[in-house]
Length: 319
Image (cartoon, rainbow, N blue to C red; front, side, top):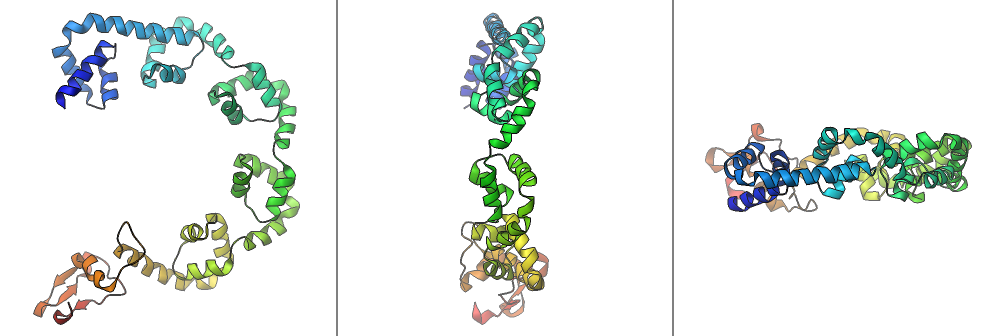
């Protein structure tokens, strides 16, 4: 194994990698890599230097073509920090050419077209398979005159009538965004602008969207909002709201049963929290008991909390 790693260090060193880059790539200590290079790679220094320079030339070429740090790292399969340091050290003279070609690397007319159709930065970046920061900079530089058209069409990009329909049926923001495959912020803004008159109907139908009796039944058993939501396949916020409105009278019993439920779950097997027989209870809690007089087994409060469904003492004749 050691020999294999030593061979990999040599290979990477020959390719022009530095000690720190080799350590990061192979996930081993920097000091051990550095010492190995000093001791065993003196004869490889010239080849290392030559290949190291060829990497720098490759970085300079890509940087001058308008590629950013992340893109260069992706193309050369290198660490982003390493590329960033190389650019700072070796590409200062290429800054103006990079900036000019960086803009060319993105089709400005295509960005203007999509922006005027109402697409936001994230959506344009996804459509053109480009970096979000790059798109954002291009929009700031080249699309100021399209701001009003963008805003107008951004609202059109979402079917307002469809949002109103879903909102009036009791769907919340997150659910509407998921149904329409749209951005949550976009949906939220549309609801604020266009659904103020539907607030009461939404509230009424939002309650109908959840089976209140099912929520009350599970809440009574000690389930929390997230567990109920998972069980009923609903949003946690919707269930939370339902509990707040309809389960106030069950709070004390819920808290008691919540403690029992937590203790019971502690007893169950980590992989299968569905069933446990009576004979297994003592086995699962044996570490919490100490041997008493006459061979009895007595629960030791210092070792844990005693479950509700097993006794404090097991008499010798019953186990």
